[in-house]
Image 1 (tube, rainbow, N blue to C red):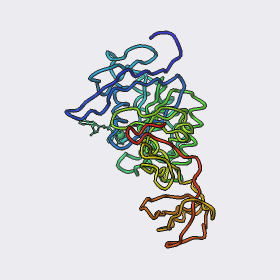
Image 2 (image 1 turned 90 degrees about the horizontal axis):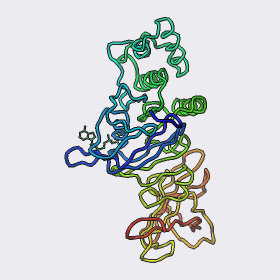
Image 3 (image 1 turned 120 degrees about the horizontal axis):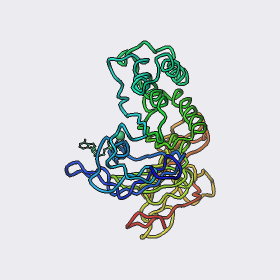
Length: 336
Ligand SMILES: Nc1ncnc2c1ncn2[C@@H]1O[C@H](COP(=O)(O)OP(=O)(O)OP(=O)(O)O)[C@@H](O)[C@H]1O
Ligand SMILES: [Mg+2]
């Protein structure tokens, strides 16, 4: 290993194809030591493949993975200082939770009493302290997921690779575990790549977020920056829930043929003097807010985020004021 901070990762022109599917298509990415990166993208965009290539569980067709400045192509998975939490947990079915947690420690010749002590502490930390005698097939998906996380915590890697580690948790547990993960990251400062589908995770966890589509990086940046200035219409439509309204040619939002205009639902407000007229088709009351699905006379659909109890219903005509318009090139989709 070369000198410098521990836990830097550099992907250089990384490529991996399966038959005619190019899962990872020339990825360049630098992850700084101690950084937490969230990797987001639609299903099949190459997220798991990237983690597997970094972990050494799969080999690239082209390009390199450098850990701390060293090309790790010749380093087998068990010698790479990475701990991966798999999308499907990958627990040993014939071992109890305690057995799963202590296995790696015992392989590294940690004494049994010490291994048990550490395993119990990690299990307590993730709220599975009372499940130590269970086997994987005796637990829910969310419980298995926490065992897999606890097992990763028990290693002392340079890099954590987490593949949707919270996906099987219910909303409350996900919220709590997300907070735990953040606290843990602040304490350990171990470089982490965290794959997620979840908008909240992508926005709140990462120092930077990487948006992928079809094996390519579409944008990299701090979450708020990516949200405020999406690099193209794909990123604009992907990050944000409900997604940004995109109007080819500008239409009701003004503009011209050469542009696609975008406006986020929260940047559309009900205003009697607003220039855009639309009819409410549906109202989704979400408790803390409401989402109005509206349609303009030319057929354009606009989604509007309002406070709770917006005071309008299906069939009502409303006027809208649009703020913070995003401009994209109609031909390329790139931000202008
Ligand atoms: N072993 C394999 N053999 C053939 N095709 C594969 C293999 N692994 C992945 N792929 C393909 O490569 C592409 C990327 O897969 P990958 O698992 O990296 O996606 P992902 O972004 O993790 O998706 P998801 O969000 O559904 O987990 C997909 O089209 C997938 O079908
Ligand atoms: Mg995946």
